[in-house]
Length: 118
Image (cartoon, one colour):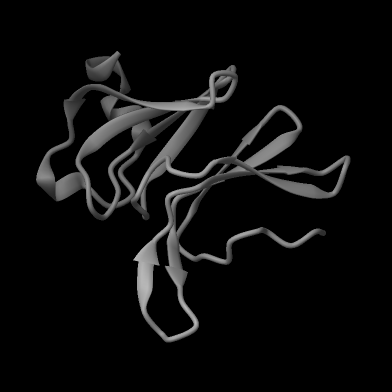
């Protein structure tokens, strides 16, 4: 398997059709500092190739997601109570209406909140 462009941990990975999308996470710098990753990267298994789809998308980690058609819905995270959606075709992240309760930020089950947010 080809190597991902940006080495990170605590990222979100979501399969959509024949691609894997890696979103956010934590990047450790050479000097030991860490920062939140902002990228969306895509892995194409047929081409065995990684591509940076969006450089400045979501500065967060530890969130949950699910995919419907060409949309990846993301909920919670370590730094945000926002609910967001990544449109794969438009290569754009947007906020959804509503926020999660503060005690549900880390890896909440997306199916619990979906009906209230859409």
